[in-house]
Length: 266
Ligand SMILES: NC(=O)c1ccc[n+]([C@@H]2O[C@H](COP(=O)([O-])OP(=O)(O)OC[C@H]3O[C@@H](n4cnc5c(N)ncnc54)[C@H](OP(=O)(O)O)[C@@H]3O)[C@@H](O)[C@H]2O)c1
Image (spheres, rainbow, N blue to C red):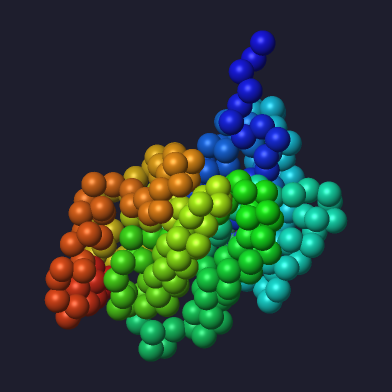
């Protein structure tokens, strides 16, 4: 008889699952038998990936195309999921974007849209499903933050601030969930080879000279493993871990100057 897989009978909702880190996280959950609800804007890409994942891993997949940057998108999505008779055991808040450049002269809609997606939608979805996790005393939340979470980011200010929020919120929830059986992990990747860089324009900054971006599957696997262990924070890569741990011991002014330099054009 085949061995029962860890995720059988559970469903993971993954935002930003049409590509990049989110899609690779979807593979990790599906491999362990979790059914999937895949969310992003690109309906065709989602449908194709939902089909692939279902046949590759023998799990149920439900693609839902929605712009999570829209007001109340989290509430709309949760309503849609419940109307389909589905429930969520694990929420992966992965959808997000960044934009490099000075705050002066930046596009207002792009800056506010980052807060809407990276912060507001993440909080809204967590608020929707958190009571269910606590009631079931299992499952939980895997939030995707960044190494940007650990210090302010001159020349990418709103993105860094949004990811600092994600880290702070996640760690607080981790403590609130202690003893309940509900897990909370915050995945903090450094530069990763996905579509992120093109949208963010970070390929033109000095930061991109600091070595090649790592594969998104290696990041996804690290995040998945950390979530299963209820590891509070996972920073991928030795150098990233070292730098993030070093930051609190450096003078703030030095940190700001270093990040400013790294985020400057080449
Ligand atoms: N790549 C890196 O270097 C890096 C480093 C640290 C942290 N991160 C974080 O990792 C997460 C995933 O990024 P990634 O690198 O995988 O980037 P990506 O390849 O650009 O993927 C982003 C995903 O989010 C979806 N998305 C974007 N805007 C959306 C919206 N308004 N509503 C719903 N879905 C939306 C995209 O799909 P659609 O376009 O179809 O909507 C896509 O599936 C982000 O939170 C990012 O901040 C990335």
